[in-house]
Length: 145
Image 1: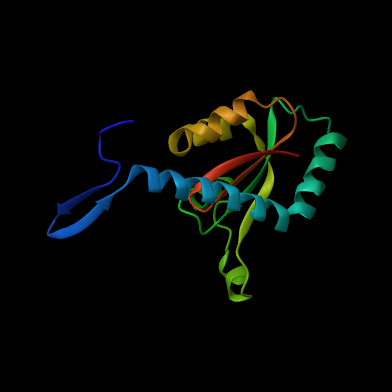
Image 2 (image 1 turned 30 degrees about the vertical axis):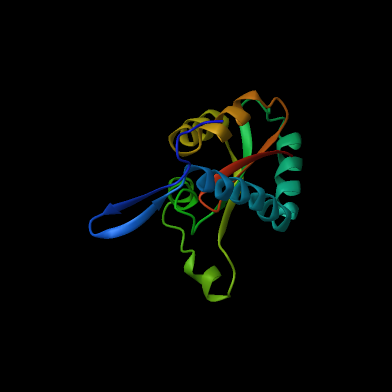
């Protein structure tokens, strides 16, 4: 057993802060699991893009399908790069969560994932079939299409 404390209370800028790496890992695992729900609510669009990839004879080693929550701290900037100037507010005004979905260059996505979710980047790199990259809940998760 490790004698090192798992959680530490610190004072930062006059505020008491709990530093608990294990709790953060649990939260991260939950967030990654919740990406599966995001995939499920976007299943029709994923199926559409999977057919388009097949029809266009796009190689899974070169392209992925993405589902990006535009309001996510990582998904939003990626969506802005992929769809600059798109007005997402209309979707929000309808009480819906805006998602950017489409087929994207795989190497670009791998590079982007390296910056905020190395675990997902490795998972994508190791996947040989058509991949779906979901960015939501502050994390990314990779699924087979």
